Image 1 (cartoon, rainbow, N blue to C red):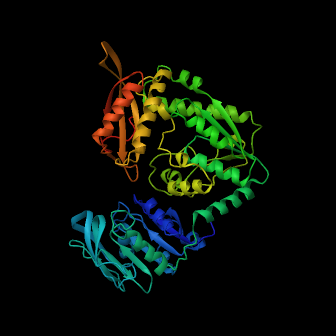
Image 2: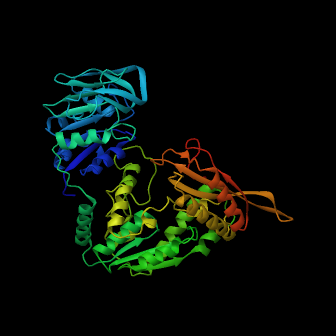
Image 3: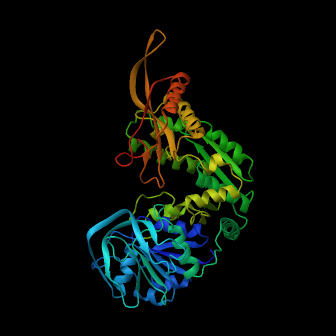
Length: 509
């Protein structure tokens, strides 16, 4: 990227990605790097600002993560958030101590509106606090610019050195005017010009792909998800006629999805290879009921199927992947805790024989990927597709998987997505259904039935790390039950899952 850049120094905070996204929403490019990145490397990035994230440690502990002290002498504006603010105070000669009373949740905060961070805002702000330590003594030359009832230093500044700190989290939605505070740091302190946009990113990536690939071919595994679909559309725009997309239908897609892929990408300037491997996958899963075994079998067979098909294509020189930025961060590439390993992060095995990997979305967040998709003309139903696990419906069928069960679930799921999707009274971020392995007695006309119980799942969430069940109106629940039991042969009972995360996960398996 040739844009102005803000470096996000990661100290293990759970909101690091959110900070980076907020900066980008303000029109400034951001990148997350480990806390111990050498000052020389950061200086080479020529940042217009640096933000220290929060973290679970105490700044006064000898083993707590600390940055290179020379960062403070670069003359680059710095903003510390939560632990980041405490670390700045501690490293520059202040004092950090344990709180007598920890402060969690939405808190009333009084701010100094003379400070550049709060200029033009009300003196009373509601912010999200989450800390067990506090700054008791500020370093020399620093001024206190905010306080709460139990936190005497909720923000500080040294205007001359352009170093700022806030104890609260301005990056979260719960903090009033939090994004505006970040915006003031970016534009009024760092002198940002706001030169980052999705239009700009798209053009730069198109040029980058052309330079990397030249006239050679690219192979991409097209899953039908937003990431791989946007990647395919971008590559076909950059190097038309040089992209080969392999779509492997494992038989676990939702109703109409495979047909939509054929329609959408069949009209693009790329080679689309469609593989119906449903019989192979079903045979491999025969008799398997354990969800982890299902996942491993599907993952292994998918790789084998992709390898079989790619060997028939004369071995394209480059492999493309729909890797996005959270994949990189979650896989521990920034020395963060490994949340989950992603198959498309970590480089290519040496024996694959490709010249290189093409990852045009590697530095984008999901919402940015969707914006790129819109610019590339992809339909909303693909860009905003409901989250869907890689193993697909195979892990939404409890117990052994059969074609009959998959067909039942496909039809029921289509009804759930249709009805909840068009309901203006229902707020839900994800909704689907699960075919349980429980049968129950029912009656249709004068006949006894013994059919499957189907569970409907709908949740509200902002980050998919936690969720609450969606408060679906009773009238809609009744309509779902009526339509499913009348229209889907094999379902005799419908139940609604009212469990949050935690203790449950969003998916059942």
